[in-house]
Length: 123
Image (cartoon, rainbow, N blue to C red; front, top):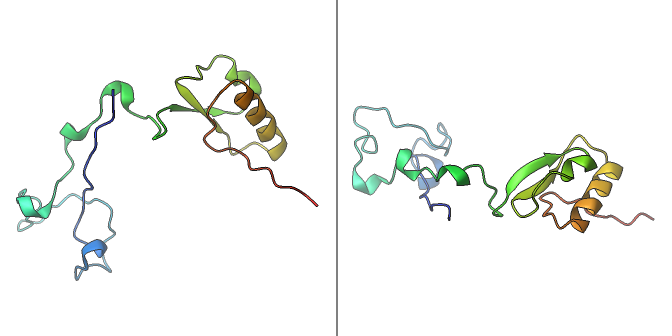
């Protein structure tokens, strides 16, 4: 199964040089004005979000890499995780030493690590 492609839902604001560009952020806001053309779904004003754009239940929460994320804080947590379905995200609360250890074990077992630690050579 593949994820659906959804359009970008624009709101009148900074992106189109509108006069209100200093007052509204470009993130989605539900149109509420009585004269708002987007609210009455005039075709030329673009798409609006609705329930029809939702993805199938078994694909929701999936990372763009095609895996589901799992947060790892200890090496033992890798034992009962399916490497074909889950990608590893190293916890931000860990220190560098423990992150490197977990990353090494995860790579050996064939896991996809979403936030790998970059080795920096020290002088």
